[in-house]
Length: 76
Image (cartoon, rainbow, N blue to C red; front, top):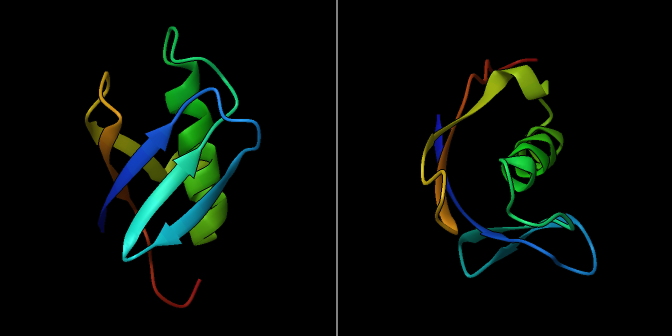
């Protein structure tokens, strides 16, 4: 399953929210050396109830708008 998200770096609080059908991931880290992307990946995994290894970034490495692919099996 592919999920489009908007990532907001350097936020005061970290978490995932859904607004008007859009998934917004707030991370505390700066967008340097992929650290914010890694934190976003972990938060998305937590939000969807999967292991972080099941989530990978497929588009938007340097953009706020990103696409993550989740290896999500129903019933798990």
